[in-house]
Length: 110
Image (cartoon, rainbow, N blue to C red):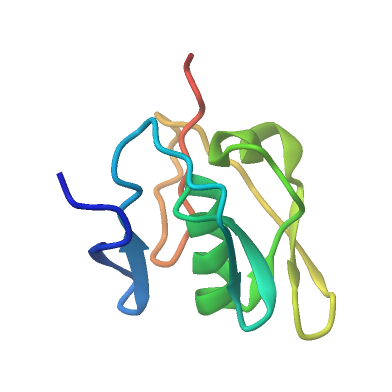
């Protein structure tokens, strides 16, 4: 097990993925990147939002879990000018394959 706050790996060449310690730990710490709230350290939504900020200069509205993006998000917004871009969901088993630098989230099956 990788300890809390240590880097697990790097996504898309420049986005660090940090360890949350274990599945049940919630720090309650707010995380910001360049003054923009990304979420709670180091939860799935925080990673998704930080990845979008670093890779695409975009963010999205508040959601509870990354799996919620399937039903609660219809777009992302560029932070520099507010331009909105539609999100297009493709389910597992779809004939559409993921493209490089796509945001991936699985549905919560619980």
